[in-house]
Length: 334
Image (spheres, rainbow, N blue to C red):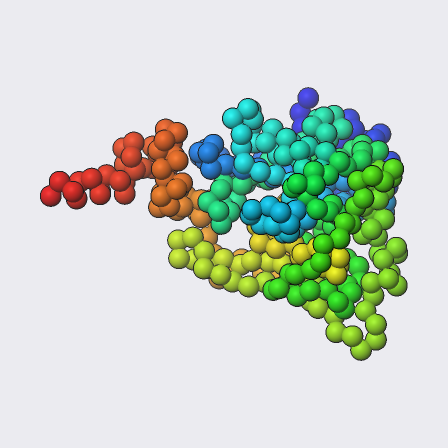
């Protein structure tokens, strides 16, 4: 069955009202086809799951988690479910689904959680090529089972809010600054709760339920919802890092930042077919494809992995060892 027909096939399971804007977003994502991209080495590949669901008022939300404080890397960060490709994974979609199942208990069932699209890969700062896999949760009775060794809390955020500079709900004046996203550990979702994932998470993010609880008091300063900073990127170009407050910083949840925010901005731009209300890229910033190609040819970790897996020629290396390796070998003969 073509992917474009999945939405119609699963429509009866979507018990929440679906706004026209949300319907168009899902259709655009289901019809998205990424361009041809040379394969990255499996040993340096990863995938994340952009799991969307329809909230109580017809808006699309994305599942996000706070990583466990005990993790050796990115501890406490706000992230999408995901991780590195493992030998038994048959595809990047398999990787993303497996990781989501292991981290938050999201079933791998493609009927209840159908695929919408696979997006263009991103280069992470730890030299992994990360591919976002976008799915739609159609079963609103699902309940998460958090893996406490990997995930501290689970929450959601409106997808369209990643194109805006205005928060989707009132921000508390106590929210941490996106430049210094610190907080204290507290669980947002209780995995022992009998309520479903959809009903519990949408009740947390709905404006009506949060209004009056998180709204700043008079004369209190409210931090900006969206901020960014430009850093040095791959190949000498600048790179813009975006940050979005979740409104839960007082509960220990960090803002959505860096790679996660870049992926969600890109997902929202494709789905809603409109530009962001802010400049997404830094002046002269290279595209994701350009950054990956440059790193693949010049970064020793990625280049050596490509050579080891027989991908050197695909990425334009000279011979099987790559241009840099050949130049070093020839220089040693002089």
